[in-house]
Each structure stands twice: as structure tokens, then as C-alpha cells.
Length: 631
Image (cartoon, rainbow, N blue to C red; front, side, top):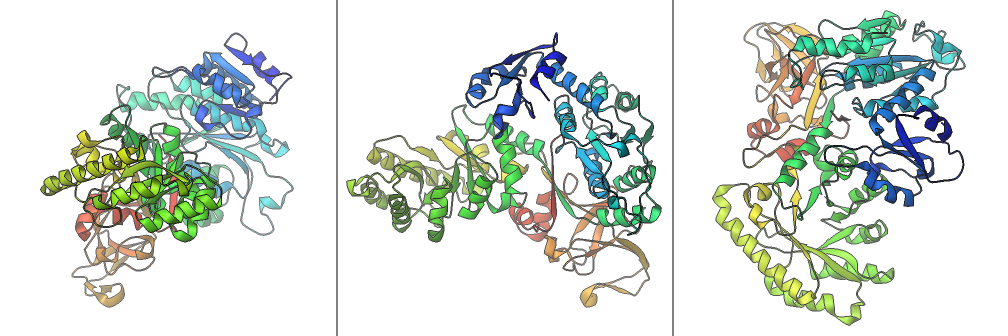
């Protein structure tokens, strides 16, 4: 869209400051300066003022990076006005989704179900707020529009003869979420989305602080559909049935609906709430001094949750100073995904040293041999003052230097022959038992030992060095020893060692594949270990030990949650499936099954298995789909 048109649309609403010559073609809208992409010269920045920040202060920095124009004044209203115009020019079909839960899942399922037949534009992640919706709608500016989009209803089948994709073009479809937190917000979202097809998911008490009742909340949400041709709401609020109803309205035949929905609902997914993740970071940040740095551990695929998406959320939050991975390949993946935060490699392999240096990763040095490896690689590339991190063994006895080795370490780091190849950025150690009060005396002895080593090292080097030893438990239980930086790991995912009510981040869900009645006296599963004493209703779920559902849950060793009721695992957990006793419930095929999450916490599963939450979370196989969302 030409900048001149944008200025015309926003005249009298906000000021558009132009710092470049010519009528620029605007392709990207930006509200967060940290998310500036490579195409800065075609970007328009909206300087939004909030209670705690003012976007105008980032204008000079963005101008230097090539951004040509800035919206100041009532930037939110200007952003929404622009979205209303873009929506008015779109001739395709729009589906608007609102509700308390399930909006993102229904949107993503509809995308998967319809993508073969439609060109689909959809809300990124969970962009459903007063700012998220206009950013989502802006995508329509680049959408293809053609004659097939005049009517929302077509006739689709999966027959090779009649498949709609055999036609030369696809109709255009947009799917947008709308979320509100108080009265009056939906009136502003409605003209931006203006859906022909309305979809309502479950509406409950969640996020209802600013509503007098659920009835009022529902009435406000219904304002999204004042111009809709149809509003679809399944009485059971099952996402699969909701999607099927949308497909039915769009003209799909029942056979196609059944086959596609069945395939889609067979997925086992790990849902990752990035809003909750950032909220947990804020809690731990609140325990630290303003000047104390924070490193977040994203090793082991971010504890199984997905290192790239988690790292992006942490970087965008502005709350994190460093990231840390286990091996070089993990750091390279983050760099390739556009992560710019400093990254520490905790276990740098000798063979990967070139990768580490080429990707600006910072290795942990824990022995004289590892120091030689880094120095040699840095000197071979002509590098000077390359950042490294020194590990002290203060009592865990895994990796690190002892106190008596510090003088020699200082001598090696300061000898002229090494040509200043490296520079110590930080010195750190690991606490062995900071989460258990029985080890508090030992923890303090570790801290004092580390502090003595660190001060000796700093004194010998003659320049400032960051000190850090506290992990998640240490931040909560030994915050007086936060030094210059702390490292946050399992605390990211909602685990407190001081009784704080943190937010659950991860929910592992699957669905019921089949239900059958098995008579008394029959056995369930491999090995015939479960013998039924009565006739029972047995459900099969598509998750097994290859997905991370531990085999020790077999034969009543574990439970899952279906429709609010706990149901035991029967028979042996198989590689790809497990059997559940659902007798006495009204569960049916397609129902959600919670493996762990808000109602079945990870620590409960860990206690059942006699292990730790880390093992449960990191065991979720990569073949399990990860779904990320913001609230």
C-alpha cells in the first residue's frame, strides 16, 4: 500500500512522520521495534504509548535502520483504522472466531482442513487483541482476490474428478480470532474482521475479571457477528464438531468431512503457552535486582518445548540477557532462526569449535584442554577477545576448575603469547541441591567456594567478569547470592521451589481413537497383564512410549483426564497407542484427552514414576506436534 494513501486514511487521527523521499510502498506494519525484519525500507512503525512505555523513543534507532515512516499520536486507533480499510477492500470470505478457549485450535484445524481448497490468510499465533487483530488483517493487503470469492458456499468432495483444486485458482478465505478482556472492545474489533461466518468456541469464566457475569461476557463476544450471515456454535463445544459444522456450511459432503476431521483429530499435540512462559520469567525477574542479568536455558529443544519458538518469545519479551544451550548445533539452529541474543554453549565439542566461532556462540571452558581448543580455534581465525565462560567445580564434581587451578588458569589467560585470543565474559558454577532444604548448608558452602574462586580469577585478570551460580531454585531460595547474573531453567515452565503459584506452560493432549466394550475375563494389551473383572468400556488413544508416554504408566500405573474425569491406563502402553478405562464416563471418539497440563500437573506424573519433571517434559518425542500460542 502506498504511503500517500495511508497518510490520507489517517488524516485527522494520527500524524505520519515521513523521513524518506518518494511515495514508499508499505509492506510491513511494526509495533515492536525488536521485531524489525530485513525489509526495513518498506516498514511503517506505529509508536504506541502504554502505561509503562512509549514507542516514540525507539524512532531514532529505527530511522537509523532504514524505517521510512512513523505513526505518532493515537497510534492504536490509526492501526485499527488502517485495518478497517484493508478489510473493506477484501472480497473473499472471512471467518471470525471468538470464545474463551479453543479459538487458536479451531483456527489451526480449519486451516489444515481447508488449505487444499482455499488460499487461506489467518491470524498468526494468537493475535486476537486490539493490536493483534489489525496486524492480522493487514495480511489481506497482499491477498489474491478473484471471481470465485464472491460466494462463501462451494461444493467440495475428495473425488479425483471433482476436487476443487483441479480448477485454475482457489477461492480466498481469511480466518481471524477475536479476544476481549472488557466491555466495549468487540465494537472496535468487529469492523476490522467483519466476518460473514461466525464461530463460537467454549465461553467460560476464564479471563472474566472485567465482566459482571458469563452472560454479559457472551453478549459482548456476540457483537463480533452483527453483520454475519451465519453463526456456528456446537452445543458440546467440541472443536472437531465445530470444524465439521463450518465445513458443512462451506458445502463439503459428509464423507469428505468425516475423513478429513478424523485425520486431523488423531493428532497428539504439545501445546505451549508463550504468554504463560513470559509471565513466569517476569516472576523470577521480580526476585532480582534491576541490574542483575538473566540467562534462560533452552538446551535439549528447550526442555522438549521447542527451542526456536521459546527463544523467540524470550528475546521479544526484553526480559532476558543470555540464552544457553548444551551443544553447538542447538546454538546454530537458533542463529539460523534469527535469534540475536548472546548464546552460551555449555558442552562445546572439540569438533564443533569452528561452528561455535562462525555463529558467534560463546563456549563454556571447564578444563585446560577446552581452553586450548578455544584459543587455538580463535587464533587460527585471527580473532581477539573472543568471549568465553569459565566453569568452576564447586562441589557437583561434573565439569570445572578447582580452586587450586585458578592461579595457573589466570597465567594461561594473561600470557602474551596467546595474543589476547579470548576474554572471560563470565565465571559460573552449578548448585547440586539448591532445591532441597536438607542440603542448604552444602549449598552455602558451594556458593562461598565459588565466590572465592571467582574473585581470585577476576583479580588476576584485571577486568570485570560476570559471576553467576543461582539456578531456578537458587533464585527463589538464595536470592541474596544472585551476584551479577542468574540462570533460569525449569522455572520457565511453571515450577516453583518456594510455593509460588506460577503458570502452567505445557499441555500434552491427544484424542480418543476408538471405544469398545470388553467383557469380564478378557485381557488388555500385550502380555495380557490387565485382566478385567467386569465388563468395561475401553478407549484407545494415539500416544505411546515412542511419543514420551512412559511405559511405567501401564496397568493402572497412570491416569489421563477425559471430560474432567480421571481414567486409568489399562494394559501395557504400546509404542504408538495406549488403552484407557473410560467406564462410567460419557466419553466418545474424538474427545480430548489430557496427558499432563492444568489438571494433571507434570510433578504428579514425575512422582508416580519416581523421577523429575525435567525427564517427563524432555521425553516428549519430536514427532509430537508442538502448538504455540499467546493469550
